[in-house]
Length: 114
View (cartoon, rainbow, N blue to C red):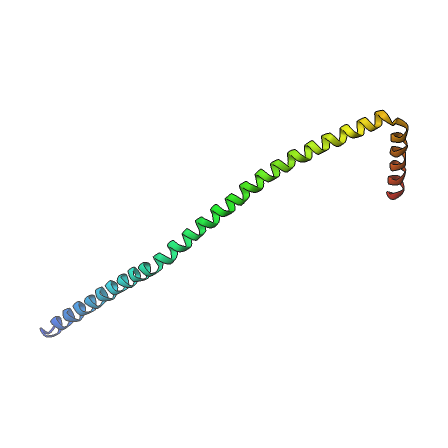
């Protein structure tokens, strides 16, 4: 079974055409991907830049909040110390009145928790 001489070149030409078509489609696909990448890159860069700015802003606000909380914590500690000293001083000067207030507060709390 011999192939005719006319069939073989036609098959080769069909294969060559198919390969060429695949190559052309591949090149076009790569070019399109590169175009999309070039189009998307500025948007991605802009989004990344905005994200960095947002992170820096949040970081600054968090640092300020930490500083403020530290300051307020010190102020509360100082206020507590002053209040305790005032209570001690009042108790030394008015021991019977302080005892009467403590008993009254205890009685009220006892009634409320029943």
